[in-house]
Amino acid sequence: MDTDHEARRSSDVPPTHPGAILREIVLPGLDVSKSQFARDLGIGRQTLYDLLQENGAVTPEMAVRLGTALGTTAKMWLNLQTEFDLWHARKQMDLSEIQRIARDAWIGEPGDLETR
Picture 1 (cartoon, helix red, strand yellow):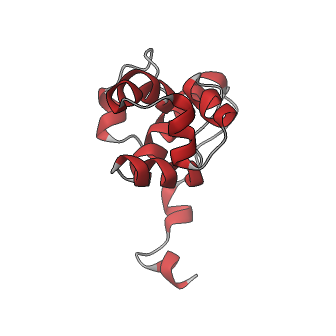
Picture 2 (tube, one colour):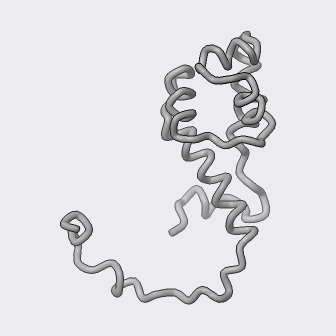
């Protein structure tokens, strides 16, 4: 199911990788070296460099670290990574052989999922 944000985004323009946001927006405003930022996050420099170069992904653990250090939420960082990953997955996958299953066949009654 597409969110309102996904519906507004052009399908030809990929979402920004969270590493690019860190590299282009966050770090320049912090007045701290990349090495110090890595130490502040409790991660290795190479882990941070990989993320900044968009060769690494924001994991749940990294999202918690970023959210805590930057006064944001872990969910925000995970959502950025998820949007990026989903866009690329949709572009790379061939879904032509997958047939839609009727919604009623798997949704059931309201509250069914809570009792399983």
